[in-house]
Image (cartoon, rainbow, N blue to C red):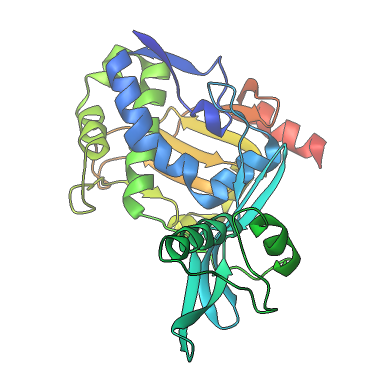
Length: 310
């Protein structure tokens, strides 16, 4: 057995908000369900600015890389910001070859300095084996001994290049993630009775879904489709805070807001909308960031606290 953070630790989960689960399942679902969202650019950015370390103590980094354009050509650009500093460099190279009149060719190279040096060094060695040589655009002989010096003289640095970054998102990520979270929270609050319920079985099915068609979960709304939720739910969310609200009525309901924008509303019971709805008490679980302070309130305590903060 191992401890599972209901809100993943790398996303700001608290040690007080955990349950005991099978270690194999914890590792499996941590990689297949939690990891895609943890690496999702908006969440990774939030982790970076809040300084939310992973379970192994690793500091989060901010990846601002993508595609940049130099002289009309497209290049992959690495641009990673970490607590130690910024690592920004081109990761590819382009070699423009032009035949000249003296039994040779001219090269024009653009791209990553290390990749360019490797290409030129290889050309120098190839030419030397044929009894030929390499010269730069100023007529100077280029050898392995002076290559670094000549490259340093001809290198051009582009400050703050524009970058086009593609941010991938799969709806399946949030359906699987919030099903896992609902299953864990239901067990945390209601115990074995909930874990053996038909609704818990539905959550497990969605957790293993490989397509959206398989991730059918009635009576649930998850990010990014939560704009349809009633405006009253806005009171249960705060920027840079994880707020999970459990309604003990019929049906039991879980309302989630992570970071104040990654939201979901999920029924914890498998009942039809036509059945009678019975209101009940509401508990609010809050994790403030970045200190991961865990608190539990009744809905009345939480509302009074919100009024005090305002």
